[in-house]
Amino acid sequence: MHHDCTSDCTKCQVRNENIFQNSGVFLVRAVCHIDANYYYGQIEALYRPEIRGKAFVVGGDQESRKGIVLTKSPEAKEYGIKTGSSIKDALKLCPHLLIIPANYPLYLHFSKRMREVILEYTDTIRPFGSDELWAQIYGDRAEVRSIVGKIRQAIWQQLCLTVSIGISDNLPYAKIGSDLAADSCIVELWSSERETKVYPLPVSDLLYVGPATTEKLKEYGIKTIGDLATAESSYINRILRCKTGETLCVMARGQDKTQVAHIESVDDIKSIGNSNTMPRDLVDEDDVRAAFYMLGESVAQRMRENGFEATTLQITVRDNDLVSFDRQVKLKRPTNITTEIVESAMELFIKHYRWHKPIRSLGVRGTDLVPEDAIYQLNLFTNEAKRSKLDKLERCADRIRGQYGQFSLQRAVVAAERLKSVNANNDIGDAQTFYSY
Image 1 (cartoon, rainbow, N blue to C red):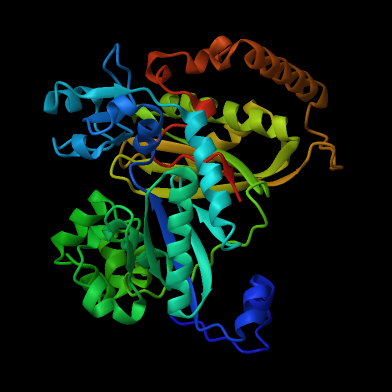
Image 2: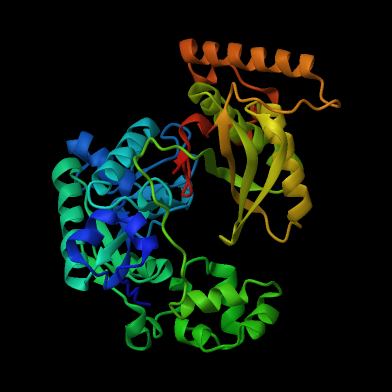
């Protein structure tokens, strides 16, 4: 919906004072979803001229021919290869397929640079993985189109990356717009045009509607976004046997009012986290504990490197039907110790997950960060001497890994075969995030 501001709209004056003073009145609160096209593949092709124009995928292991496809080139897509499929299946479809190992530090560098470019045009962005984000822009529609065009051109000129961009007045529609946009194109989907442009689209195009939810809705005749938008939310709740129906209906109608956070720079760290797609589905608590240790080790190490402790812990769980949820808990005391982070994550997981489906990916995030030297209330039931020893042990491990490599020292729980193909320190998967802003 349109955001009509007047001179006494202090919220918008604070959010973007310069634009307010220059233009006088905000006519549109525009949300843009910017998505880099086959992100890993584009970056690899920049550094490997020999693979340009050929069928290749990024991910997996060339020697063992195991692992999953993280991204695919347009030429590989023509063979029916899909992101998330196994390397083994991809090779069946295209025997001459090139398999390029992932270079996560390089992808992280480009991710940070892309955000820096976008921050030259707006101070409100919301990362959604390493290769896509939402940005919020104020102005009339002509201004918005002009700014978005400049962002796309700047990313191409400075990084040699093409991006697809969706423009709307709400986050879900903007995401649909970028999904519909061809490479390096811009698509506008305003809520005022929902009946003609959005409602005819399949319900699976809506954010957070995965394959399992799509099939369940289809059983009850809800095949398009319009079908979902005109349905009663209580009816959708009964179909899905959960309380997400109202949220999905609101998003389908273009009524989502989620704001994009204001940040000053890409170094304005508010939380530190890590999420990964696993080499295989996780089927029991032992699998989950091993994965949480893999992720928690990385998160705790980065907290220590940056001098932070977390006071709140958040986990993200996504099953193999791509249905996900987030849960968080306030920690008993600030921490950047791996064991404490993992045990809190497991408590959250056991409390909230009922094993409806195997798990595809997990995430761990420390939020409400405080400096390591912050003053806090001691707990009589906490063994501070033991905590001190754990802290010294983990910092010693940090130094060893810094000198001899991340895999030079590992916990026994993550040394199993099921996790050998994952480098948690660099993040892997379709939901990866290093820092949240």
